[in-house]
Length: 332
Ligand code: AKB
Image 1: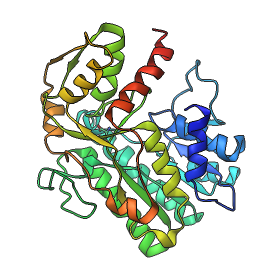
Image 2: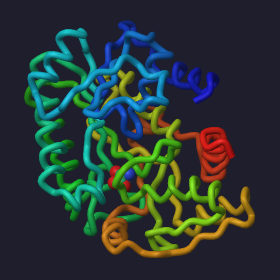
Image 3: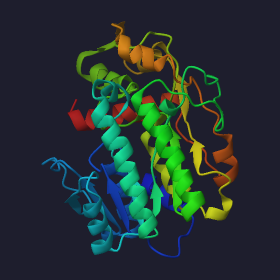
Image 4: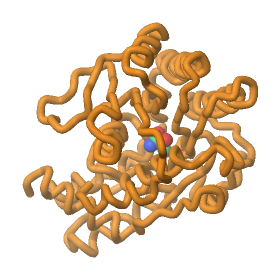
């Protein structure tokens, strides 16, 4: 984000007396890089370490210090924590919804065993730990409109099952061992970094396709409403939430959201900027089935009450900033 956006984060972060030392796992995924650059801006170069199991892309130079870390290896996580004096772990490594269905054993390993390792290390070394959850932690028997924080959670995807596991295990570690576990249920996050294997990914791909080809083939039905949020709001929610004193939190897992829209509605918003843009539909049965079991909108009023959460980007603002970022990135 540009400098004035960075300042926004600094302003919303409660004044933390002690500068945090943060380890981000899965750091080369959709969310890790922007969070790392914001923390670097707020607390200095040495405040954050990015980790992942792949090499950093050659064109990415502005990253925080980076190291290889396989979250299946608990000793390696402990080594990274102890050697770098880490006090906060942000655990982004996970297999998303669609890719999880294609690889259930790996999803169980990464999303369950990985979480277990991270929570154990957090217990032993008294870390603050953030593990994102998702709208995928809800299912077909959940009320789908304005879904509240506390409701039926019977997901039908392996991703959802493992995320409910993460929420419950984290809360168990908080209750039993006093681990400062925190989680946010994210909707689809819209950013200029392409995620891999999610059900909400179309809401990013559509911008790339609009700029490059003037059209997009959507794998969801035109009327499939899903909750979404622009990246800067997502970053703001994490920074705000993690800097809130524990005493203000009435829960450990909160819903957060920005906007809800259907493919037809985002296509209309795009046409307000690129009038010749066309959307076609070629339904992917697996992703459509997943989306049909997820909430259409989320109720995030508890986050608003407890720690003043409030998103800034509506649909048109999201569309405008996405085109600005991608035109620069793609040189179009
Ligand atoms: C996905 O589509 O799997 C993710 C999510 C909503 O958690 N983006």
